[in-house]
Each structure stands twice: as structure tokens, then as C-alpha cells.
Image (cartoon, rainbow, N blue to C red; front, side, top):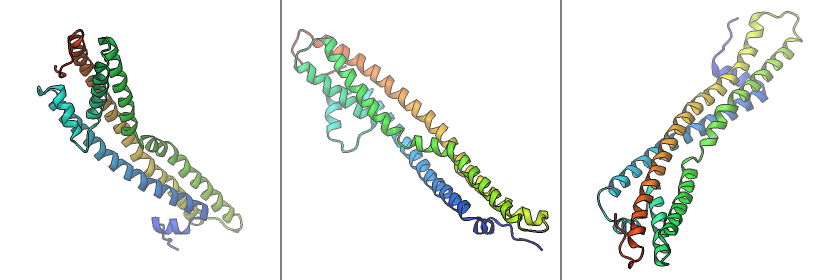
Length: 233
């Protein structure tokens, strides 16, 4: 007799444990794709916002004007928040008439702390993709092993065993491994892609911190021994 070995039929005829594994992997895959698309558009927005501010930063506007403009914005980019934290700390220390080294060290510490916070936000959900990519194949393999065990236990009660009686049970069990791989492969590819993109963003932010620190150092040296004026380049 011809047996229906479509994916739907095999899933419906699988044992309860295998069906539970399949359902969990399917839900994990759906969540993984949601995270992938969210992270894809999120990182694209971060890069665009940082590039826009960097162009504005090097356009020749004074630091005071840039800082004032940021206070008027409701939504700021990662680089803008790093700039604002460094500028705010620098101005506070300059009002206290500390030496140039103390002003620069305080601003750098503030920017480094802000950089770590921004990086934590950018890297959010990345560990989830790593977990899906590494664990899903083993979960699918567990479902396959359980399904094969269940199939052979059922065959032990039969007097005559043929390929036609063995194949459906094994095929049903192998579907779990296929779903596990379907969940894992996109997660691994996305994780590697996003990790590379985040590294580039981190390098861009660290480079900005160093360049901005040089500008602040010049301001601190120029202002030492004189009255505090507007922050310039």
C-alpha cells in the first residue's frame, strides 16, 4: 500500500514527545526570525544615525552649538549620546576650574561608560541567536532519537517487519532534526553577520571618542589659566 509521507502527515502521526519538540523548535524559529528582522533594521538605523551626526560634527559647527542642538532633540543616536555625556562632564569639570588633565580624564570616563551602555543595547538579543544556532540541532536530534526509539518499540510487536513498516516511523522522527536545522542555520548566519556589523559600529564609536577627546584636550589647554569661554575646535 502507498503511504502518505507528506510533512504534515508525518508531523501529525509523530509521538507526543516528538510533536512537542517540533512545536518548540517551530516557535523558536519564529522568534528567531523576529529577532533577525528587528536587529537588521535596528542596526541599519544605528549606522545611518551615527553617520548623520558624524557629518554634522565635522561640518564646522562649534561644540556648544552641537550640544545645544542635542538638548532639543527627542531621539538621539548612539554617537550623539556619547558626545553629550562627554561634553556634559567636560563642562562640569571646567566650571570647577580643574586642570586640563582632570577635565579630559573625566570626559573620557563619561564617554567610555556611555559607550558600554550603548554597546549593551546594540548587542541585545545577539546571545539569543547564538543559543538558537548552537542548541536547536541537538534539540532536533533528541526528537529524532526519541521518535526512532518509539518506532522500534512499536515494531517489536509485529511478526513481519519490512521497509514499508519501518520507513514511516523513522521519517517522522527525522522531521524533528530537519526543523532543528531550519531554526539553527538562519540564526548562525544572522549572528555572524550582526557580530561583524556591531564590531564595525564599535570601532566607529571608539574612533569618535578618540577624535573628540583630542578636541576636548585642545579646549582644556586653551582654557587653562583663562576665563571659561564657549567650547570650540
